[in-house]
Image (cartoon, rainbow, N blue to C red; front, side, top):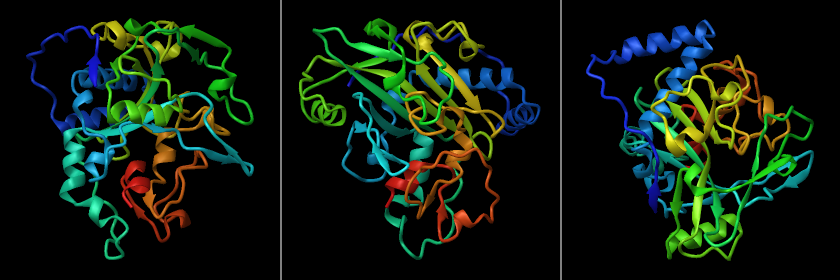
Length: 326
C-alpha cells in the first residue's frame, strides 16, 4: 500500500532518555496511584512515536510463516445462542514491531505452538515489544462514503454495535490515516474481507481504529484509538500532544494499565454484550494456547492458578498467538 500519513515533525530532544528500569517504575507508579493524566500522556507519546514506523511492521501472518491475508473480516460471535455477524465492511489486521516479531521467530512459536512437548508458557516479550491491531474501512474514490461515528453512547444490554450509532459523516481522506488500494492480492483481500466486490484500484482504506500494546510493564500498557470527527471534545481527547497533528490528530484514545477502569475500542468491543464496560487487560490475560474463543468479555482479574488456565499454555497476553499460532 502507498501510505498517506499526515503528521507534524517531532521536536528533537537531546536530553538523556530514562533507562527502561526507570521508565517502568514511573509507569507502575502511575498505575498504582491511578494517575490517569500520566498514563494518557505516555500512551499519546507511544502513538506519536510509532506513526512513521508501524506501516512497515510485518503482519501476524508473515511473522507466523503463513500466507499474508492483508485484511480480515471481524469474527462473528454468539450472543445467547444467536450468531452475530458484523454488518458494516470493517476489516482488521494484526502487526508486530521488529522486536516483537523477532521474539516470536526466535522462540519458533509458529512451529512449536500446539506441540505437546511445548508445555511451558510462551516466554515473556521484551520490554520494548509492541503489538498493534488495525481496524480499516473501505472508501470508494468516486462516490461518497458515510461513516458511523460513536458518540460515547451509554452501555446497553446486547452491546452498542456500530449499526446503533446515531450519526454518520462523509469521509474526507485528508482527515484520516489512509492507504490506496492496488490491484492484485491487496485488492482481492479488501474485497473479500469487506464483502464489497465493487472495490477497484484507486479506492482507499481509512484507519478507523487501532489497539496499541507495549510490554513496558509486566501486564503491558494498553491503549486504544479510534477516529472521530470532533477529535478535540470530551475526555478521550485529553492530553493529546501538540506535535501529533494532521490526520493523526483526529483520533481519540483510552488507556488501561490495570483493570481499574473500562477500556475498549467502539469498533471492536462495543458490539459485544457488556463490551462498553470491558477492559483490555482482563480480556488479554486469558490469551492462551488451548483457548477456543476470546469471549466472553470480562472485568475479573484471574489468579495464576485459576481453573481457566488448566491445560492451556499462556501466551503473555497476546491473543494473536493463542488463536492464530496453531
